[in-house]
Amino acid sequence: MNRHPLVPFLVACLGVAAFSAMDALMKGLSLEIGVYNAMLWRMSAGTLIGGAVFFGMRSPWPVRAALRLHLLRSAIVTVMAATFFCGIVRVPLAEGIAITFIAPLIALYLARLLLQEDIGRAAILASLLGLAGVAVIVGGKLSLEQGADALAGIASLLFSAVLYAWNLILQRQQAQLATPIE
Image (cartoon, rainbow, N blue to C red; front, side, top):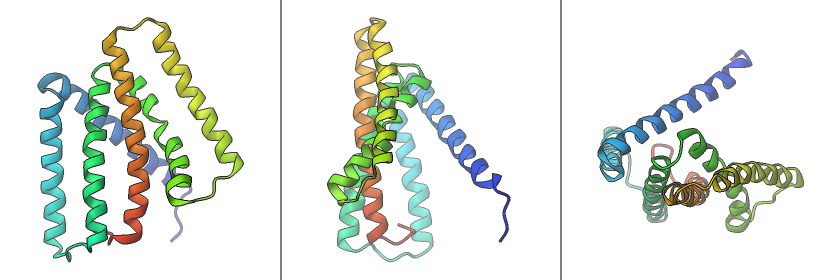
């Protein structure tokens, strides 16, 4: 199949737009009805849709090791999302998203630590530059003498980014054990 080289770029842009819209919607809902209620409705909808697809396709039950990973990842994702939404209600959305962009950078080092993957020098240098960029954002926030609420938001976002990085590692481990529908 011969596709135009712009197609992957446009698909990536669509993905970023969809996630940004979801983040904006969840920030609005979290401000309006609270983080817990927004998370409850989001997770309930995801469980119903995912469950309908899983059971509708008559998928076999996951093997024990995969099920253990699914449960661990579910717990991590729940705390990760809750801390992310708690953070973005306290800081501007664009800054919150920018701060959490460190997650893939942290995942690089977690992959080395937990999966024994090799990391090239170029990847290490690029990740350090990315971390420096986030440090500039956080440093600018801190130097503006933000209130305790904004500082709590930044801490919540940083914790969420660490959990998201762990989530990425768990995703990779799941891909090695679980079926695609899982």
